[in-house]
Image (cartoon, helix red, strand yellow):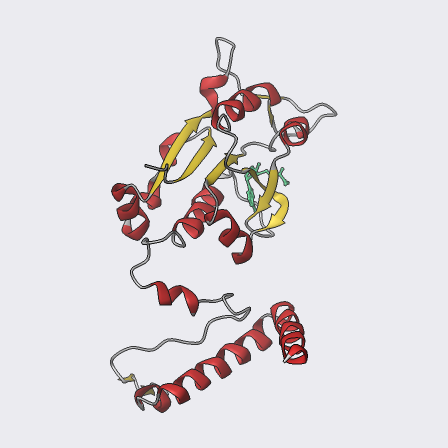
Length: 240
Ligand code: SAM
């Protein structure tokens, strides 16, 4: 039997895992063995009697830096099979996109390194060729919440994890657009009506309405995505 998609998380707080990943669809899939999770305690690779993992920064500064030797020993164990890409979560990394999530979920899994303090000694990032990934332009107190988000976004794309595969086809970013709005019962809520077309049963009209709303939302909220979408449409149109 081949090994399932596996996330190995290097952290100073292994007790944070699986956390929310142990619940709902991801949790059920974890129980079924559709994917696997290992939380590896970086501190267990410390070699002194105080189990030190950090030290003061050369050049001065207010906060500590994670030691390269300790982190490297943890990475050496986690990347032993040499299969999964090793990622360091950092605000300095490339911002996570659905495109990257798709590529990562199509592979054998991830090794995810969670920083704490000021972050990691630069030399271990270079030496290990770590892929630096950011969750966005804000600063968390540690990489663990980012790791949970990254793993969650990958796991939900694994075969069999989501109930209805077609849900994935229509999601935000799938066609380069944000998703259209959703409605459910009651049809009249506090005087607010559900758009009539959605209750028409006319599938073609519903598809067209949803596409129009997705385009409108993307154009208004995310000019960056809209520009890419327009370019893509022009290229595809020019080919046909
Ligand atoms: N000194 C760092 C800086 O200014 O870029 C911030 C360090 S932060 C307090 C500690 C750790 O949280 C980082 O090493 C990283 O692992 C994680 N982290 C913080 N913000 C993040 C983000 N936006 N994306 C991914 N990881 C983040």
